[in-house]
Length: 287
Ligand code: NAP
Image (cartoon, rainbow, N blue to C red; front, side):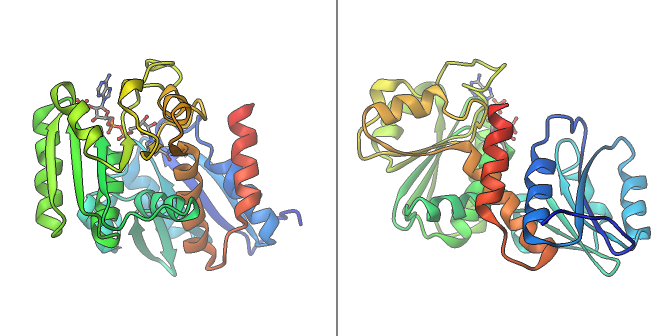
């Protein structure tokens, strides 16, 4: 079914700066069309966040936002409500406009958990290692400690203060043991002690140490389960090295896809046409 626009069309959009690289319009418009819902999705580069949020509030058919860098934290002050997980993480990637009431949520972490579920990987009682301590690691780590009962989270960072802040925040928010460490010194021991290894730095991404890996290939064992947040290229060196020794792998595109699936469901209150969204994303990544 194709989209048509009329006076009933609901608008969703990504806001950020820049937004030209965003794959969200491709995924969401394909999904709206396949689901036969009267929604449209655009991308707006936003400098004036206050003006943007006042505009959303004033426009009755403006149903939802994806929020990306640099507005994920500051957007919270313009919302009426922020869900508990987003409050813990300290940022929002989704806004839902419920009859003029703006609700903030975060789907990156829960989307990643959905990707693990789809790959039939249970996180319960597992030791999970995060390589990297940035915003994406934070979102996923909070979703895991909130809902999955892992045995332990290990957090390795390059910058000690940033690593320690994440360790302290996670420890304050749950009963899951959290152990911090140095990416430079503790990687071999931490990889050996972990069941699941999550690559959460930009290393290996197109334009940022492409072809490199944050984890030396010799550290992988076949029983490791690996996940790389990087999705350009779809298969990073980290994933290739792990697959070469027989590890189960989850690609970064699964995080991107599943956070969008959860957004679609929040905005439309319907199940997302998952395969349509996946095909649209893969096609865009291969273009
Ligand atoms: P971020 O907030 O900038 O954090 C980046 C992390 O990587 C920080 O811990 C940083 O360390 C570390 N890092 C950067 N370069 C490094 C290097 N050369 N060596 C060691 N550590 C390094 O970024 P983010 O938002 O967390 O994103 C992390 C990655 O995930 C990016 O590649 C991003 O594209 C990807 N991502 C993917 C999805 C998805 O849907 N698949 C969603 C979000 C993000 P310092 O603190 O020392 O700088």
